[in-house]
Figure 1: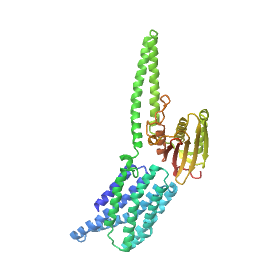
Figure 2: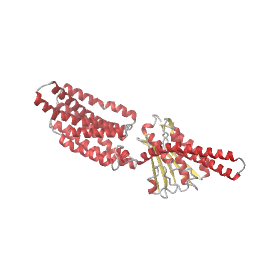
Figure 3: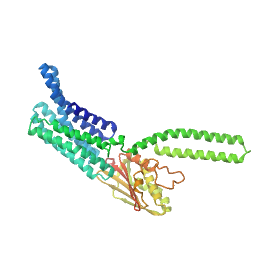
Figure 4: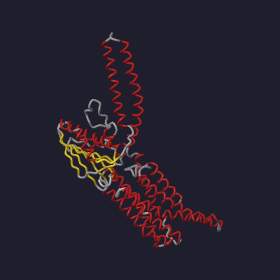
Length: 458
Protein backbone atom coordinates (compact mmCIF):
# COMPACT_ATOMS: atom_id res chain seq x y z
CA UNK A 1 0.00 0.00 0.00
CA UNK A 2 2.75 2.45 0.89
CA UNK A 3 4.58 1.57 -2.34
CA UNK A 4 1.39 2.39 -4.26
CA UNK A 5 1.07 5.67 -2.33
CA UNK A 6 4.73 6.63 -2.88
CA UNK A 7 4.75 5.78 -6.62
CA UNK A 8 1.62 7.81 -7.44
CA UNK A 9 2.70 10.71 -5.24
CA UNK A 10 6.10 10.77 -6.99
CA UNK A 11 4.38 10.79 -10.40
CA UNK A 12 2.21 13.73 -9.28
CA UNK A 13 5.27 15.67 -8.10
CA UNK A 14 7.16 15.03 -11.35
CA UNK A 15 4.28 16.21 -13.55
CA UNK A 16 3.75 19.35 -11.48
CA UNK A 17 7.42 20.18 -11.04
CA UNK A 18 8.26 19.99 -14.75
CA UNK A 19 5.43 22.21 -15.99
CA UNK A 20 3.58 24.00 -13.15
CA UNK A 21 2.37 26.65 -15.60
CA UNK A 22 0.57 24.06 -17.73
CA UNK A 23 -3.01 23.61 -16.54
CA UNK A 24 -3.30 20.02 -17.80
CA UNK A 25 -0.22 19.06 -15.77
CA UNK A 26 -1.61 20.72 -12.64
CA UNK A 27 -4.83 18.73 -12.89
CA UNK A 28 -2.96 15.52 -13.70
CA UNK A 29 -0.91 16.09 -10.53
CA UNK A 30 -4.18 16.79 -8.65
CA UNK A 31 -5.88 13.52 -9.54
CA UNK A 32 -2.67 11.50 -9.02
CA UNK A 33 -2.30 13.04 -5.56
CA UNK A 34 -5.80 11.97 -4.50
CA UNK A 35 -5.37 8.59 -6.19
CA UNK A 36 -2.21 8.07 -4.12
CA UNK A 37 -4.16 8.82 -0.93
CA UNK A 38 -6.02 5.54 -1.51
CA UNK A 39 -2.78 3.68 -0.79
CA UNK A 40 -2.30 5.60 2.46
CA UNK A 41 -5.91 4.97 3.49
CA UNK A 42 -5.48 1.26 2.73
CA UNK A 43 -2.32 1.14 4.86
CA UNK A 44 -4.14 2.70 7.82
CA UNK A 45 -7.19 0.47 7.40
CA UNK A 46 -5.55 -2.88 6.63
CA UNK A 47 -2.18 -2.66 8.39
CA UNK A 48 -2.08 -0.03 11.13
CA UNK A 49 -5.60 -0.37 12.57
CA UNK A 50 -5.42 -4.17 13.14
CA UNK A 51 -2.06 -3.77 14.93
CA UNK A 52 -3.41 -0.95 17.12
CA UNK A 53 -6.53 -2.95 17.93
CA UNK A 54 -4.43 -5.96 18.85
CA UNK A 55 -2.12 -3.99 21.12
CA UNK A 56 -4.43 -1.43 22.73
CA UNK A 57 -7.97 -2.68 22.25
CA UNK A 58 -9.55 0.78 22.38
CA UNK A 59 -7.76 4.08 22.59
CA UNK A 60 -7.78 7.64 21.39
CA UNK A 61 -5.11 6.78 18.79
CA UNK A 62 -7.23 3.95 17.44
CA UNK A 63 -10.22 6.27 16.97
CA UNK A 64 -7.99 8.88 15.34
CA UNK A 65 -6.49 6.35 12.92
CA UNK A 66 -9.96 5.04 12.02
CA UNK A 67 -11.27 8.57 11.35
CA UNK A 68 -8.14 9.43 9.32
CA UNK A 69 -8.54 6.27 7.22
CA UNK A 70 -12.19 7.07 6.56
CA UNK A 71 -11.41 10.69 5.68
CA UNK A 72 -8.60 9.74 3.30
CA UNK A 73 -10.76 7.05 1.72
CA UNK A 74 -13.54 9.58 1.14
CA UNK A 75 -11.14 12.04 -0.52
CA UNK A 76 -9.68 9.26 -2.65
CA UNK A 77 -13.01 7.94 -3.95
CA UNK A 78 -14.61 11.34 -4.58
CA UNK A 79 -11.81 13.71 -5.69
CA UNK A 80 -10.00 11.23 -7.95
CA UNK A 81 -12.85 10.92 -10.51
CA UNK A 82 -13.45 14.68 -10.24
CA UNK A 83 -9.77 15.44 -10.87
CA UNK A 84 -9.59 12.95 -13.75
CA UNK A 85 -12.57 14.51 -15.52
CA UNK A 86 -11.34 18.09 -15.11
CA UNK A 87 -7.92 17.00 -16.40
CA UNK A 88 -9.56 15.40 -19.44
CA UNK A 89 -11.65 18.54 -20.10
CA UNK A 90 -8.57 20.76 -19.94
CA UNK A 91 -6.35 18.40 -21.92
CA UNK A 92 -8.92 17.82 -24.68
CA UNK A 93 -9.61 21.59 -24.95
CA UNK A 94 -13.24 20.95 -25.78
CA UNK A 95 -14.65 24.07 -24.11
CA UNK A 96 -13.60 27.66 -23.58
CA UNK A 97 -11.96 28.68 -20.31
CA UNK A 98 -15.12 30.39 -19.16
CA UNK A 99 -17.25 27.27 -19.67
CA UNK A 100 -14.57 25.06 -18.09
CA UNK A 101 -14.53 27.30 -15.00
CA UNK A 102 -18.28 26.83 -14.59
CA UNK A 103 -18.00 23.08 -15.18
CA UNK A 104 -15.31 22.75 -12.51
CA UNK A 105 -17.71 24.15 -9.92
CA UNK A 106 -20.71 22.22 -11.22
CA UNK A 107 -18.83 18.91 -11.20
CA UNK A 108 -17.95 19.41 -7.52
CA UNK A 109 -21.60 19.15 -6.45
CA UNK A 110 -21.76 15.30 -6.51
CA UNK A 111 -18.44 15.21 -4.62
CA UNK A 112 -19.77 17.42 -1.84
CA UNK A 113 -23.13 15.59 -1.70
CA UNK A 114 -21.51 12.14 -1.51
CA UNK A 115 -19.12 13.26 1.25
CA UNK A 116 -21.99 14.65 3.35
CA UNK A 117 -24.09 11.50 2.85
CA UNK A 118 -21.21 9.20 3.82
CA UNK A 119 -20.39 11.04 7.03
CA UNK A 120 -24.06 11.40 7.94
CA UNK A 121 -24.86 7.75 7.09
CA UNK A 122 -21.62 5.75 7.62
CA UNK A 123 -22.71 2.83 5.46
CA UNK A 124 -20.17 1.73 2.85
CA UNK A 125 -22.82 0.09 0.67
CA UNK A 126 -24.76 3.37 0.42
CA UNK A 127 -21.49 5.24 -0.20
CA UNK A 128 -20.45 3.07 -3.15
CA UNK A 129 -23.98 3.03 -4.55
CA UNK A 130 -24.00 6.85 -4.54
CA UNK A 131 -20.56 6.86 -6.17
CA UNK A 132 -21.78 4.48 -8.86
CA UNK A 133 -24.30 7.03 -10.15
CA UNK A 134 -21.75 9.78 -10.85
CA UNK A 135 -18.15 8.49 -10.54
CA UNK A 136 -18.55 5.86 -13.28
CA UNK A 137 -20.01 8.46 -15.72
CA UNK A 138 -17.09 10.78 -14.80
CA UNK A 139 -14.55 8.06 -15.64
CA UNK A 140 -16.44 7.14 -18.84
CA UNK A 141 -16.61 10.75 -20.00
CA UNK A 142 -12.90 11.18 -19.23
CA UNK A 143 -12.00 8.16 -21.38
CA UNK A 144 -14.09 9.46 -24.25
CA UNK A 145 -12.53 12.93 -24.03
CA UNK A 146 -8.96 11.55 -24.07
CA UNK A 147 -9.64 9.26 -27.03
CA UNK A 148 -11.43 11.99 -28.99
CA UNK A 149 -8.60 14.44 -28.22
CA UNK A 150 -6.22 12.09 -30.03
CA UNK A 151 -8.56 11.55 -32.96
CA UNK A 152 -9.26 15.27 -33.43
CA UNK A 153 -5.66 16.52 -33.10
CA UNK A 154 -4.42 17.97 -36.45
CA UNK A 155 -0.75 18.31 -35.44
CA UNK A 156 1.29 15.13 -36.05
CA UNK A 157 3.64 15.49 -33.07
CA UNK A 158 0.80 16.44 -30.71
CA UNK A 159 -1.17 13.40 -31.90
CA UNK A 160 1.69 11.20 -30.70
CA UNK A 161 1.51 12.68 -27.20
CA UNK A 162 -2.29 12.46 -27.09
CA UNK A 163 -2.14 8.82 -28.19
CA UNK A 164 0.40 8.16 -25.43
CA UNK A 165 -1.88 9.78 -22.81
CA UNK A 166 -4.92 7.80 -24.02
CA UNK A 167 -3.00 4.48 -23.98
CA UNK A 168 -1.57 5.37 -20.58
CA UNK A 169 -4.74 6.48 -18.79
CA UNK A 170 -7.85 4.98 -20.42
CA UNK A 171 -7.31 1.27 -19.52
CA UNK A 172 -6.57 2.16 -15.89
CA UNK A 173 -9.61 4.45 -15.60
CA UNK A 174 -11.84 1.72 -17.02
CA UNK A 175 -10.37 -0.79 -14.54
CA UNK A 176 -10.89 1.57 -11.59
CA UNK A 177 -14.52 2.19 -12.57
CA UNK A 178 -15.26 -1.55 -12.83
CA UNK A 179 -13.09 -2.97 -10.03
CA UNK A 180 -13.78 -0.27 -7.43
CA UNK A 181 -17.10 1.43 -8.11
CA UNK A 182 -19.10 -1.36 -9.76
CA UNK A 183 -17.53 -4.30 -7.87
CA UNK A 184 -18.07 -2.72 -4.44
CA UNK A 185 -21.78 -2.31 -5.15
CA UNK A 186 -22.04 -5.84 -6.52
CA UNK A 187 -19.99 -7.35 -3.69
CA UNK A 188 -19.54 -5.06 -0.64
CA UNK A 189 -16.07 -5.24 0.85
CA UNK A 190 -14.54 -6.48 -2.43
CA UNK A 191 -10.74 -6.51 -2.11
CA UNK A 192 -10.05 -4.57 -5.28
CA UNK A 193 -6.52 -3.38 -4.54
CA UNK A 194 -4.60 -6.38 -5.88
CA UNK A 195 -6.42 -6.11 -9.22
CA UNK A 196 -6.21 -2.32 -9.53
CA UNK A 197 -2.53 -2.38 -8.56
CA UNK A 198 -1.76 -4.21 -11.81
CA UNK A 199 -3.27 -1.39 -13.89
CA UNK A 200 -1.58 1.29 -11.76
CA UNK A 201 1.76 -0.44 -12.32
CA UNK A 202 1.00 -0.64 -16.06
CA UNK A 203 0.32 3.12 -16.21
CA UNK A 204 3.46 4.03 -14.28
CA UNK A 205 5.73 1.76 -16.34
CA UNK A 206 4.11 2.83 -19.61
CA UNK A 207 4.53 6.46 -18.54
CA UNK A 208 8.27 5.94 -18.08
CA UNK A 209 8.46 4.18 -21.46
CA UNK A 210 6.60 6.99 -23.23
CA UNK A 211 8.83 9.56 -21.54
CA UNK A 212 11.79 8.06 -23.40
CA UNK A 213 9.80 7.69 -26.62
CA UNK A 214 7.18 10.11 -27.89
CA UNK A 215 6.85 12.04 -24.60
CA UNK A 216 3.82 12.43 -22.35
CA UNK A 217 2.46 15.58 -20.70
CA UNK A 218 5.71 17.42 -21.34
CA UNK A 219 7.87 14.96 -19.37
CA UNK A 220 9.99 14.33 -22.43
CA UNK A 221 10.71 18.04 -22.65
CA UNK A 222 13.22 17.61 -19.85
CA UNK A 223 14.47 14.17 -20.85
CA UNK A 224 14.62 14.34 -24.61
CA UNK A 225 11.48 15.90 -26.02
CA UNK A 226 11.49 19.20 -27.55
CA UNK A 227 15.22 19.51 -27.88
CA UNK A 228 14.12 22.69 -29.63
CA UNK A 229 12.93 24.25 -26.38
CA UNK A 230 16.15 23.29 -24.62
CA UNK A 231 18.19 24.61 -27.54
CA UNK A 232 16.33 27.93 -27.51
CA UNK A 233 16.99 28.33 -23.79
CA UNK A 234 20.66 27.44 -24.16
CA UNK A 235 21.15 29.72 -27.15
CA UNK A 236 19.34 32.60 -25.43
CA UNK A 237 21.60 32.33 -22.39
CA UNK A 238 24.71 31.93 -24.52
CA UNK A 239 23.98 34.88 -26.79
CA UNK A 240 23.30 37.12 -23.80
CA UNK A 241 26.74 36.32 -22.39
CA UNK A 242 28.46 36.55 -25.78
CA UNK A 243 26.68 39.78 -26.60
CA UNK A 244 28.07 41.50 -23.51
CA UNK A 245 31.62 40.19 -24.02
CA UNK A 246 31.84 40.78 -27.77
CA UNK A 247 30.39 44.30 -27.54
CA UNK A 248 33.08 45.24 -25.00
CA UNK A 249 35.88 43.79 -27.14
CA UNK A 250 34.57 45.45 -30.32
CA UNK A 251 34.40 48.78 -28.50
CA UNK A 252 38.08 48.39 -27.52
CA UNK A 253 39.08 47.56 -31.11
CA UNK A 254 37.14 50.52 -32.49
CA UNK A 255 38.53 52.94 -29.90
CA UNK A 256 42.12 51.75 -30.41
CA UNK A 257 41.81 52.13 -34.19
CA UNK A 258 40.46 55.67 -33.80
CA UNK A 259 43.31 56.57 -31.41
CA UNK A 260 45.97 55.22 -33.81
CA UNK A 261 44.36 57.05 -36.72
CA UNK A 262 44.36 60.32 -34.76
CA UNK A 263 48.04 59.84 -33.78
CA UNK A 264 49.08 59.21 -37.39
CA UNK A 265 47.45 62.37 -38.65
CA UNK A 266 47.86 62.80 -42.40
CA UNK A 267 51.31 61.21 -42.64
CA UNK A 268 50.20 57.71 -43.68
CA UNK A 269 47.04 57.78 -45.79
CA UNK A 270 47.17 54.05 -46.61
CA UNK A 271 47.37 53.03 -42.93
CA UNK A 272 44.54 55.43 -42.11
CA UNK A 273 42.41 53.79 -44.79
CA UNK A 274 43.06 50.34 -43.26
CA UNK A 275 42.12 51.70 -39.83
CA UNK A 276 38.85 53.01 -41.30
CA UNK A 277 38.18 49.49 -42.57
CA UNK A 278 38.80 48.08 -39.06
CA UNK A 279 36.36 50.60 -37.54
CA UNK A 280 33.67 49.81 -40.17
CA UNK A 281 34.13 46.06 -39.65
CA UNK A 282 33.86 46.49 -35.88
CA UNK A 283 30.62 48.46 -36.29
CA UNK A 284 29.26 45.76 -38.62
CA UNK A 285 30.09 43.04 -36.08
CA UNK A 286 28.38 45.04 -33.35
CA UNK A 287 25.21 45.30 -35.46
CA UNK A 288 25.25 41.56 -36.19
CA UNK A 289 25.60 40.68 -32.50
CA UNK A 290 22.77 43.08 -31.63
CA UNK A 291 20.48 41.49 -34.25
CA UNK A 292 21.23 37.95 -33.02
CA UNK A 293 20.67 38.95 -29.40
CA UNK A 294 17.47 40.79 -30.30
CA UNK A 295 16.01 37.65 -31.87
CA UNK A 296 17.04 35.32 -29.03
CA UNK A 297 16.33 37.36 -25.89
CA UNK A 298 13.48 36.48 -23.54
CA UNK A 299 10.11 37.37 -25.05
CA UNK A 300 7.63 39.16 -22.81
CA UNK A 301 4.13 39.44 -24.27
CA UNK A 302 1.76 42.34 -23.72
CA UNK A 303 -1.51 40.79 -24.82
CA UNK A 304 -4.62 42.74 -25.70
CA UNK A 305 -7.57 42.22 -28.09
CA UNK A 306 -6.52 42.47 -31.76
CA UNK A 307 -8.35 41.62 -34.97
CA UNK A 308 -6.17 39.01 -36.67
CA UNK A 309 -7.18 40.04 -40.19
CA UNK A 310 -6.07 43.63 -39.44
CA UNK A 311 -2.62 42.45 -38.28
CA UNK A 312 -2.27 40.44 -41.49
CA UNK A 313 -3.49 43.23 -43.80
CA UNK A 314 -1.28 45.85 -42.13
CA UNK A 315 1.76 43.66 -42.71
CA UNK A 316 0.88 42.86 -46.32
CA UNK A 317 0.19 46.55 -47.01
CA UNK A 318 3.57 47.59 -45.62
CA UNK A 319 5.27 44.96 -47.83
CA UNK A 320 3.18 45.61 -50.95
CA UNK A 321 5.99 47.36 -52.86
CA UNK A 322 8.45 44.51 -52.13
CA UNK A 323 5.88 41.89 -53.09
CA UNK A 324 5.11 43.69 -56.34
CA UNK A 325 8.80 44.04 -57.24
CA UNK A 326 9.28 40.32 -56.56
CA UNK A 327 6.36 39.46 -58.84
CA UNK A 328 4.47 37.74 -56.01
CA UNK A 329 0.68 37.68 -56.12
CA UNK A 330 -1.07 37.67 -52.73
CA UNK A 331 -4.37 35.84 -52.22
CA UNK A 332 -6.31 36.11 -48.96
CA UNK A 333 -9.01 33.78 -47.73
CA UNK A 334 -10.47 34.93 -44.42
CA UNK A 335 -13.10 32.34 -43.50
CA UNK A 336 -13.66 34.17 -40.22
CA UNK A 337 -12.62 37.45 -38.66
CA UNK A 338 -11.62 36.65 -35.06
CA UNK A 339 -10.43 39.05 -32.38
CA UNK A 340 -7.60 37.43 -30.46
CA UNK A 341 -5.95 38.20 -27.15
CA UNK A 342 -2.36 38.51 -28.36
CA UNK A 343 0.68 40.79 -28.51
CA UNK A 344 0.30 42.80 -31.74
CA UNK A 345 4.01 43.65 -31.94
CA UNK A 346 5.32 40.11 -31.62
CA UNK A 347 2.54 38.47 -33.65
CA UNK A 348 3.02 41.15 -36.33
CA UNK A 349 6.74 40.37 -36.38
CA UNK A 350 5.96 36.64 -36.73
CA UNK A 351 3.75 37.37 -39.75
CA UNK A 352 6.50 39.58 -41.20
CA UNK A 353 9.06 36.77 -40.79
CA UNK A 354 6.78 34.29 -42.57
CA UNK A 355 6.09 36.71 -45.44
CA UNK A 356 9.84 37.30 -45.80
CA UNK A 357 10.50 33.55 -45.90
CA UNK A 358 7.82 33.09 -48.55
CA UNK A 359 9.30 35.90 -50.67
CA UNK A 360 12.79 34.39 -50.42
CA UNK A 361 11.37 31.00 -51.45
CA UNK A 362 9.92 32.59 -54.63
CA UNK A 363 12.68 34.93 -55.91
CA UNK A 364 11.31 35.17 -59.46
CA UNK A 365 7.54 35.15 -59.18
CA UNK A 366 4.90 33.17 -57.37
CA UNK A 367 1.74 33.23 -55.27
CA UNK A 368 1.31 33.63 -51.52
CA UNK A 369 -1.98 32.35 -50.13
CA UNK A 370 -2.95 33.65 -46.67
CA UNK A 371 -5.83 31.94 -44.88
CA UNK A 372 -7.60 32.49 -41.56
CA UNK A 373 -9.86 29.70 -40.31
CA UNK A 374 -11.27 28.56 -36.97
CA UNK A 375 -12.50 25.43 -35.27
CA UNK A 376 -13.77 24.72 -31.77
CA UNK A 377 -10.19 24.30 -30.55
CA UNK A 378 -8.07 26.66 -32.64
CA UNK A 379 -7.85 29.81 -34.67
CA UNK A 380 -5.48 29.13 -37.55
CA UNK A 381 -3.45 31.52 -39.69
CA UNK A 382 -1.65 29.78 -42.54
CA UNK A 383 0.68 31.13 -45.23
CA UNK A 384 1.24 28.94 -48.28
CA UNK A 385 3.79 29.63 -51.02
CA UNK A 386 4.30 27.79 -54.29
CA UNK A 387 8.08 27.78 -54.09
CA UNK A 388 10.35 24.75 -54.53
CA UNK A 389 9.50 23.30 -51.11
CA UNK A 390 11.84 21.94 -48.44
CA UNK A 391 13.34 18.41 -48.47
CA UNK A 392 12.16 16.21 -45.60
CA UNK A 393 15.60 15.90 -44.01
CA UNK A 394 15.78 19.71 -43.75
CA UNK A 395 12.13 20.23 -42.88
CA UNK A 396 12.46 18.47 -39.50
CA UNK A 397 15.16 20.99 -38.48
CA UNK A 398 13.70 24.29 -39.70
CA UNK A 399 12.74 25.49 -36.20
CA UNK A 400 16.20 24.89 -34.74
CA UNK A 401 18.28 27.96 -33.80
CA UNK A 402 20.87 28.94 -36.44
CA UNK A 403 19.62 26.35 -38.94
CA UNK A 404 18.72 27.74 -42.35
CA UNK A 405 17.67 26.17 -45.64
CA UNK A 406 18.75 29.25 -47.59
CA UNK A 407 21.91 28.96 -49.68
CA UNK A 408 22.26 32.71 -50.08
CA UNK A 409 22.45 34.22 -46.59
CA UNK A 410 21.94 37.75 -47.82
CA UNK A 411 25.27 39.25 -46.85
CA UNK A 412 25.25 37.90 -43.32
CA UNK A 413 21.75 39.14 -42.46
CA UNK A 414 20.18 35.69 -42.15
CA UNK A 415 21.12 33.84 -38.97
CA UNK A 416 18.56 31.04 -39.09
CA UNK A 417 16.66 32.52 -36.14
CA UNK A 418 13.45 33.73 -37.82
CA UNK A 419 11.40 30.55 -37.36
CA UNK A 420 12.93 29.95 -33.92
CA UNK A 421 11.64 33.39 -32.90
CA UNK A 422 8.21 32.52 -34.37
CA UNK A 423 8.22 29.28 -32.36
CA UNK A 424 9.01 31.17 -29.15
CA UNK A 425 6.22 33.71 -29.70
CA UNK A 426 3.64 31.00 -30.41
CA UNK A 427 4.74 28.96 -27.36
CA UNK A 428 4.46 32.05 -25.15
CA UNK A 429 1.02 32.72 -26.67
CA UNK A 430 -0.16 29.22 -25.73
CA UNK A 431 -0.28 28.14 -29.38
CA UNK A 432 1.93 26.30 -31.83
CA UNK A 433 3.56 26.60 -35.24
CA UNK A 434 3.65 23.83 -37.83
CA UNK A 435 5.68 23.77 -41.04
CA UNK A 436 4.67 21.34 -43.79
CA UNK A 437 6.33 21.13 -47.16
CA UNK A 438 6.83 18.93 -50.17
CA UNK A 439 9.53 19.30 -52.76
CA UNK A 440 8.08 20.91 -55.87
CA UNK A 441 4.78 21.74 -54.16
CA UNK A 442 5.64 24.68 -51.89
CA UNK A 443 5.53 25.22 -48.13
CA UNK A 444 2.71 25.89 -45.66
CA UNK A 445 3.34 27.49 -42.28
CA UNK A 446 0.39 27.31 -39.88
CA UNK A 447 0.06 29.33 -36.69
CA UNK A 448 -2.47 27.83 -34.26
CA UNK A 449 -3.86 30.02 -31.49
CA UNK A 450 -5.96 28.24 -28.82
CA UNK A 451 -9.69 29.00 -29.03
CA UNK A 452 -9.49 30.30 -25.45
CA UNK A 453 -7.56 33.32 -26.82
CA UNK A 454 -10.52 34.31 -28.97
CA UNK A 455 -12.43 37.24 -27.54
CA UNK A 456 -16.10 36.35 -27.15
CA UNK A 457 -18.43 37.86 -29.69
CA UNK A 458 -15.78 38.11 -32.41
